[in-house]
Length: 91
Image 1 (cartoon, helix red, strand yellow):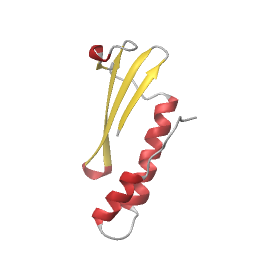
Image 2 (spheres, rainbow, N blue to C red):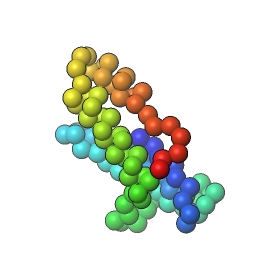
Image 3 (spheres, one colour):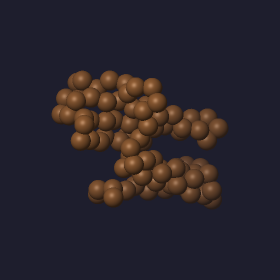
Image 4 (cartoon, rainbow, N blue to C red):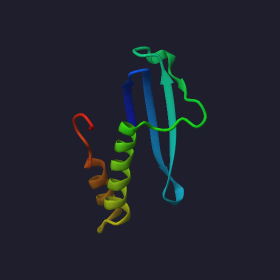
């Protein structure tokens, strides 16, 4: 999952991937607003904001619903998961 967030204090890019054992890995990059070439890894301990957390929560629910708890072939479950997206602004 890729989240690009133009925050009030700068730009944020979050990259979340599922890894073994139903665990996820999260990388957070930060930089000045409108300067993507200045993005750098975020400081240790930096966590998603409330808006980013809503997207991560949706991703967790979709992954659980379609891939872990879903029925049928794994390939079909992954396709269903990939189509479970949020559109528009998160509030």
